[in-house]
Length: 407
Image (cartoon, rainbow, N blue to C red; front, side, top):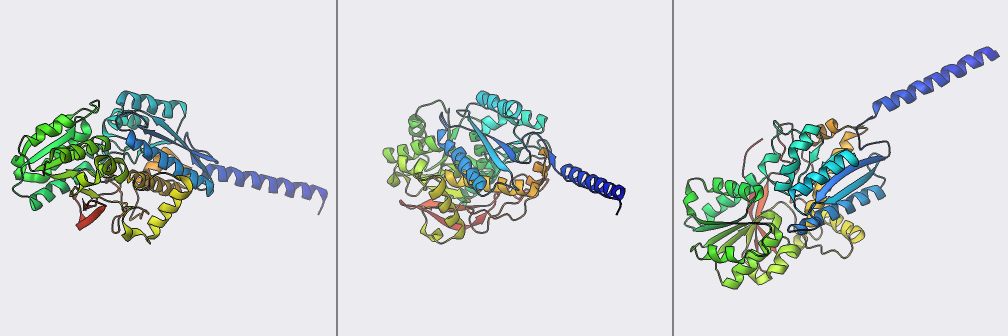
């Protein structure tokens, strides 16, 4: 081969290499917050304020992504998890969301906590076309892909859970006189609305309602007033701090009411312990998670993975806090979405993959419950199991239930 031919071959090889390199780069698509080495995820939770018990969600998610990074990241990219405190204050939530989007330039907002707080940023994030994923709130509004295609919840909606609890009362105590304690914001009002929906034409059995504000130091007088109504069933749509207060006060008053609480306020560590185990005996709620304190899950592979994670990445934390399962399950779901995105880490593709999850099993979900979404269904988990507290632990009873058939 002549020297000229060698030069021509070398030129062609170099040209081919450049073309292939260019082609490889073209196949990778990134929006702000993503690169060959990193994926920035924004998070907003109340590490302080009246709902600070939920701050543990942000902590367990941070630990989960540290584990993922230690394992090599997602498709070779490390997770940069940026989490800010909003003290459960909607104006502060807006401030932190803008900071994450406009200063930190995150790819998406993940697992922001609360109904009023997320309501304050929903329009902003949808107008900006920023994925607003796996919101820590069961408000029905997060399952509205037609009007808010960039916002998606995770657990059962308050519609599902409210209807399930309402139907339970109809079956268990058809002649009940019901009192409702609820938080005076979008969260409490949404839950109450759908509980009444579950009662159907028996709504007249509700004889008293009392709304508390999160700024109140105690809800003792609300419980006293509801007891004086003559109700024999109390339904508490309250966050952990106030749910614990309601359970404790009911016990102190000797009010022998059939007491129901929402699923997010069933933590042994955050609710039952401060309320008192004896006061919580007979309490009824619904769940979609395995109970870490229940020996039936001792040899369950998913539970073992969760416990191994806790031992290594959150040593010393009370594993009985069910809020940990909530954060772990959502982080595992987001991991699945990002892996499905491959090298197309655009905001549009993140939402496309989030809306195409089929029978995804999570380590902490009860058997038979899986994550399912579609372009018209933004409620990933929509089944629940009723459970009763026996004075030591929660016990499941009945069958898997679904409050709404919406698809």
